[in-house]
Amino acid sequence: MDPLSTYNAVNSLHPYFSEIFIMLCNLGIVDRIARIVIGSGMIALVYYGPKTPWGWFGIIPLTTSILCFCPVYGVLGVKTCKKKKP
Image (tube, one colour):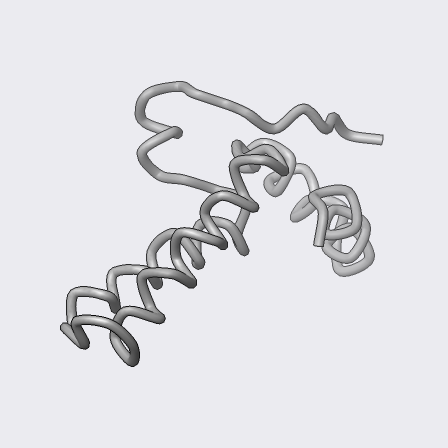
């Protein structure tokens, strides 16, 4: 799901929420794909490989990729999202 389709879905609820979404979105598509791959790989380690519970930390990159927002990027002022409000 790209940020633009999420924007349109949120905008159908209320225009104010879509403005908040555009302000909070700070992850680009490459960053999101990398987070999905890394998070899925970490969670796979829970079931395959060393089978340690540390793999559950993979939920963090998966969640940030779904929400298009990374709190660490927000604190540091980094924004890899290139999409602007339509």
